[in-house]
Length: 329
Image 1: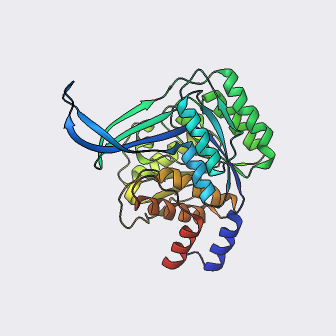
Image 2 (image 1 turned 90 degrees about the vertical axis):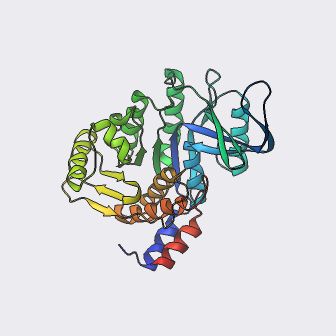
Image 3 (image 1 turned 135 degrees about the vertical axis):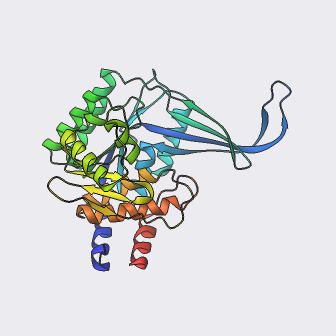
């Protein structure tokens, strides 16, 4: 597929200021870097002498940052805890210039945090602080009311589910019903637990493993892909189904049409961390900017490939994305 430079410029211009609500599991990625010079006398474990500590957004919060870097105006809606990590998260949000009025503090839950300890580029241990229990009805109502208040001022909604309890089946149904009533674009990055709760959305974007797990089948051949696509569309009734296939790119599945394929754009895969967040962010921004589904998938696939060439979770800047696409075209 080739997009003309004029069309790319038009889509890029339309990216600016698009307001996208990102609803889901807000996370904090906390890193501790150091050196190992001795083994502890208390137990046969390494002693890390800390050189550096820093924090980054993870989960749905990373999607919000991607929207920001692509020229949009993210509106994250989710929860954080009344704890130290929640305070760090709030500071990061404010420093980034992202609106924080959609963040709800739930003192009964911890801020979902992934704490990584790394010594000389070796990942030593990861510590997860989280609750996977579904949020209560009161918090669900607060999330829904926050979206309801802003629904007329947003261009699209991303539901970013990591099965950490924020997106409950009841809340998912209410959000989708509202979005369809208001004719709002709604895209979904699902996980196993709520997979079939996401009915009647614009775009549903699972990866191969997620689709295989819920369908109880392997997707290896084109025939498998067609069968899986039909089953998922029948159950979900989404306008588009995007199945990400790692090095095989993305399959675009739509009722009544042949499967369309978009090959991967990663030239040198270094780290796949954050690629899915970048794909759903770019896809939603492009669709809200007036791109058709194949144009949006093309740009999203490109962005995801560029992220895979970087170490760590690195959002793609709008100018970098469009400049590289134009150069390669």
